[in-house]
Picture 1: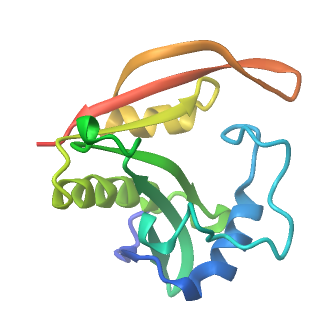
Picture 2: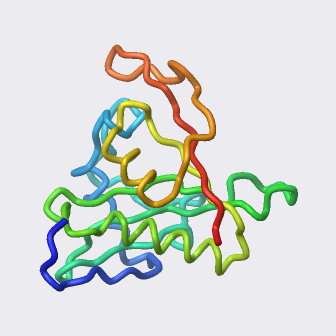
Length: 167
């Protein structure tokens, strides 16, 4: 991680971020983390009825959109209303190495706490070693593995379930 003294600004997404986040999503798409067969098409909206701005925190770095994290309730069931789940984290290629992913992850945990959650979970593809290292460094532990859950680019890939208690 570079220590230039500049820290990312983390804020809630707004509808006006749609174009910048859509472009970021296309630039960062990779079989390392995506289960869809290809990147979003140019012009596809980032936000929709199931992915509203209120689900996203965004990072700005040097006054540019640098990344995002999506934080949601995993189900509508009252029985697990105490849990939040990260369902997407991306950092633009130009912004990597500046602590932005960790800042987004820390902000998601803090936002989950503010929402009353006592636990946070996520899913990560087994072959995504950089993301797994990030999550482990932030206190997430492997809670389960679904072997060969996805077929990506001709290879079967594990779905790794991770979580941590929010203290």
